[in-house]
Each structure stands twice: as C-alpha cells, then as structure tokens.
Length: 117
Image (tube, rainbow, N blue to C red):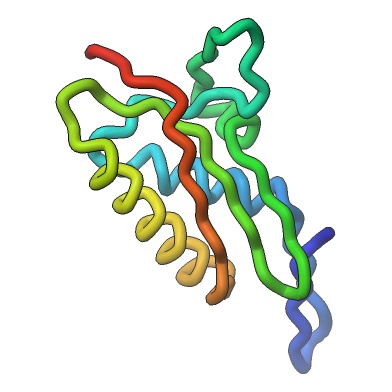
C-alpha cells in the first residue's frame, strides 16, 4: 500500500520502495553499520548488499497511514550493538519525517551479523 498525501494542489503518492531506499541510505550513514543484508537469508549465509540494492534489506508495510519498517543490518565488531541499533532507529525516523513527512513511523532493527573490518 502506498502513502498518500493530499493538499490543495493535488495528491502525492509515495511508494514503499521510496521509503525503503531513503531508510537504507539513512541507516548506512550511522556509525557502526557495515551494510545491509537481504531479509531472506539462505542457509544461514548473509549477503552484504551494495548501495544500489539497499531496499532488499528493508521491509516496508504501510497500514492506516503508519509505516512499519524493518531494517536488516550488519554491525562492525567492537561497537555496542544496542547503541548502533538505537542510532539507526532514530536516524531513520528523523530522515523519514524530514523528507517525507512520515511522523509516525515504527522502525525495527534486526542485526543479522557482526563483521570485522
């Protein structure tokens, strides 16, 4: 389902793919995040996604004008996982509110792996 914004000039439709892309870029800017992984892990192996495929590591569902976002990330070894996840949630919420006007986004972070740089 799409996010629709109606104003005096007409209607704006924002697709879940746009929300996923913006969320992925915001998450990658956070300290301690090595990358995104596909939300469909095969045989316990997680594939590090490039910047062009960030939306494969993000699941977006829009219901009742509220976005539910799940981000699947890899964190850097030596960082505090809970702090990195909290920073990702805050950054994604802030970015979605700033650029898309999504004020009530529910962001969930799933840490799939830890990687040594």
